[in-house]
Structures are given as C-alpha cells and as structure tokens.
Amino acid sequence: MMFKKKAIALLLTAAMVFSMTGCQKQENTEEKNETQPASAVNESGTVEEAGKFDENGISAPGELPICEEPITISVFVKETADIADITQHTVFKELTEKTNIQFDFLVVPEDGAKEKLNMLLASGDYPEVIMGGGFTNADLVKYGTGEGILIPLNDLIEKQCVNLKERWADNPQIKEMMTSPDGNIYGIPAMDSGGMPHGTISYKLWMNTEWLKNVGMDMPETTEEFRQVLQAFKEQDANGNGDPNDEIPLSGATGTWAADIYLFLLNAFDYFNPDNGYLKLKDGEISGTADTEGLKKGLEYISELYADGLIDPAALTQDSSQLVALGNKEDVVLGAASCGHLGMFVNIEDGDRAKAYDNLLPLEGPDGYRGIPAQHGPQVSGAEFVITDKCQNPEAAIKLADLFCSEEWSVRTQVGIKGKQWDDADEGTFGADGETPATRKYLNLTTDASNETQDYKLGWVIRLLEPDWKTTFQVVGDINEPGNYEARLLQCTEKLRPYAADVDDIPPFFLDEETGTQISSMKTAIDDYVRASIVEFITGEKSVEKDWDKYLAGLDKLQYSDYIALNQKVYDDNYK
Image (cartoon, rainbow, N blue to C red; front, side, top):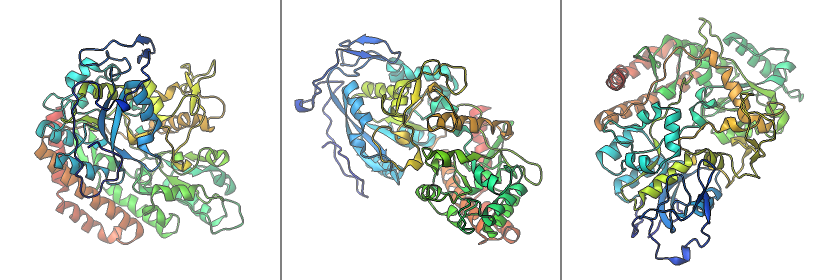
C-alpha cells in the first residue's frame, strides 16, 4: 500500500508495493496530470521545448517537467510545528505540477523523527527517498557503504544535476566534504544561502537599547559592565510601566538554536563551542574545551548572576515557544535574550519592539579574553536528501534534489510565493552589500516568533545546497524594517567577525562504522554530562568552588581524554 500521512507509533509496519520502472505511465489514470505544460523553464531561466525525454521518460538536465508521464515517489519527511499540513503544502503541489512527480508521504513529527527513521531503516520497510533525515557522516557510511540501503549518487549527479554541480564550482571543497572514504556520495547535505549567512556566528545576545536609555547606561563591553546593566534592569523599572518587579533582565531557552544563556557568556572567558563536541582545532592540534580553567571561571560568573536574580530561572528549562511568549508580552518585560537571531523571541513585524533590540559585541572577561566561535568558510556534512535502494526512479529523484539546489527553488522553499511573500526588486535598488543590484524584495517576511502556521515555505523541513540567494533581496530604508531583516542579521553578524576566536574550523570527518559508533557513543555521553553539569553549576545545585574536581573526575570516567585523542587520530588520518 502507499504511504499516507500519519504519525508513526512504535510499530512501523506499513507495506509498500512498487511496480514502476523509469518514468513509466501509472496504472491509476485518475491520478494522471492532464495539464502537461507545452514548455518548461530551465534553471538558467531560458525556455526549453517540452517533450525532449530519454528512453526512460526523463527530461534533459535542468529541464522540466522531470518525467514525461506522472510517477509517484514515496518520501519520508518530518513536519515541524509551523507547517500546516505537509501533504497539502503549496511547495509540493507546485513541484508535482512542474515535475510530474507525485508524493506518497510518510510524515513524522519533528520530535523524535531521527529515532523513528532509524527504526524504519532497521525494519527494512522504508520509502524511496528520505528528506530532512538528519543523516550524519557516520550514518552515510553505515547505511551506504555498510548496508547498501543508500545508493551511490555519483553517476546520477554527473548525468542529471545542473545546480548541484554549480554549487561545487562555487565552493570546490564541498564535493570533497560530501565524498565518503569509499569514493561514493550517498546524500546531499544542507547549506544555507551559499554557506556564509548569519548562522556562521550563531552565539548572539540581544539587548533592549530602550531599556539602556531608560537606566542611563551604554551597551556593556565587559563582563562587569554586563552585570551592572542587568542589575539596573532589575532594580530601576527599566520598562517604565511603574512596576519595578516585572522586568526580566536576561532569558533564553533550551533545545533550540543557540538560545542557552551560557553560550555567549562563557566565551568571555575562553573558547567554548558545544557545537564542536567540546573540541577545539588550532594548527592541526585538537584539544578539549569542557575542562578548561576559563570554563570554570565563566561558570562562577554566571552562577553569581543567577544567584543575584539577574537570570530568568525558566531560561534553563523553557522551550522556544515559551521564550516567544515572554518576548512578545503586551508589556515589554525582557531586557536581554540569548538566541541565534532576534526573530526567535520577538515578532519582527512589531516594529518598535524589534528595533529596540541590538546584539552585543563579545564581552571581555576579567583576564582580557574576548572572542566568539565563528565559521570561516562553507562547511557541510551528513545529508538531508538520500535515495534508498527501494527507489524505482532514481534519475527522477536526483533531478528533484537538484531543484532544491537552485536559486529559484531555494527562494520558493525558504521565502514563499512570488507576489505574496516576495516580488521583483524595485528599479535601482541593491542587495545587502550595497553594490550588487537587487533582483527581489520581501513583501512578507516572518520568523519563529510570528507564531504562524503556514503552507507557503518549508524552512528546515528540507533545504539542500543553496546558492547565495539572500543577498539578492533589496535593502531599502531603515535597516530595522521587517523587509530588511536578513540584511540586518548579516550586519549584526559581520560586526562580530573581528572578534572571531583564533581557532580553525573543524572539518567534517568520514569514519568507518566501528570508529563512528565509538565516537558517537562517547560524544553523546560527554554532551549529556557536560550540559547537565553546566546547569547544575549555574543554579547552585553544584558548587564551582567545591565540586569542580568531582566534575573533572566525571569527565575522566567518560574517557574525555581518549575522546580527544580519537578525534585527533581521525583528523590526522583524514587531513594530514
């Protein structure tokens, strides 16, 4: 039977029957698309004659529709809370109209999606294509090289892909990052808008500048000045509503992007980047960041802020939706928040409120350290689009993936519909760099804090190797206007770049299954232990002064030094 939309329970026993080869005509003629276009627009924007198909019914590279006759491809996809109904989503409806590919969806909620996918793969009952599966490099080796569930894409890419190969030409190292030790490419990873967007420096802290004016203070630049500002926010009725007790100096969230309150602050004491697995690379040498004296001093500082009531206790437990509710209260009650971008806690269409917040420069700690983790070039690993050995139409599937690597479909999936969410740029306008002529403008730009369930864009449900499409949108007028939000975030990011920590990017590793399993198991245990310990130190459940040695002993039990040494060996094997 065909996959229909459903939430997966613990048992996953849906059976599939596949009877198609190539792009042959389906038996069910009622599902046939009767509105075949007379011509199609290829990815370079030129019109091609329809009807040029090979012996398998596949069009030439870059041409639409993909298939001469309608086919169906079964697809695993996760559904995020902001998506109304993925099976009725406008993106997939348009893809069907333009490609002749219909989708038989197996939809799972985002929460727990990876675990449920692993169950599917273990059961042998999985779809033809997996979108947004979050495969790691170790997964690609296991399910590709090891088990043969994922098919090699090398020949398919070479024969059918136009846009993906353009991304390789833009950044030649990406192809190398995608290639497993056996020489095969088993999946296509995600890369946001050319690989160097605002997420390349994700640890940001946003402060209410109106509150600063109200308490007569400037943006803090040191940890001590930051403490004094938070104290003023707490004690001086910073929001001016007559209630001196409703201000929350600093909050954040957990389980979402870069919103843990300690991420930005700990980097005033030493380099600290959990995203790197508590590792640091400099001049070919890997060291640890979970056992440093700088981390200890940073936790002492943050625990003092917490003890003084300057940090919202909920910040250590609440999710992103609760942070949004706090940031959008009728009365402004939040002085500062930690998160990857402002729109994670403030509705950017609330003009005055959104304009009031600006991001801090990295703070200088008491020992003079002042840095922030930063990505120095495009980095990709793992895969968000794979084709399994169940696939009856791999050439059609890879051409579908190639669309997601184009500028046209990147804008469609990440912004929305022309004439509704965006349109052609105004004449004579320029992009974010102030020099490149703009080609598009935003009509309606929403973020996480908009609390909107929609069916016009996909976000991180699925995105692949995108070109630098964000810089194509015009920037006109006040940078704080909602339509300039992406440009504003790029500016906020670039002002941090001079403070980028003096470390090197840790490149992606491909590991054999045994080593991958070993490192993954060690990393999971270390991540859980360090994260839990940080929270306990901040809240005072553990004393930094009295319990630090016990914490280090716990790291020893988890073989942290062996974990560092194993990563060093893998790095040496891959890159030396």
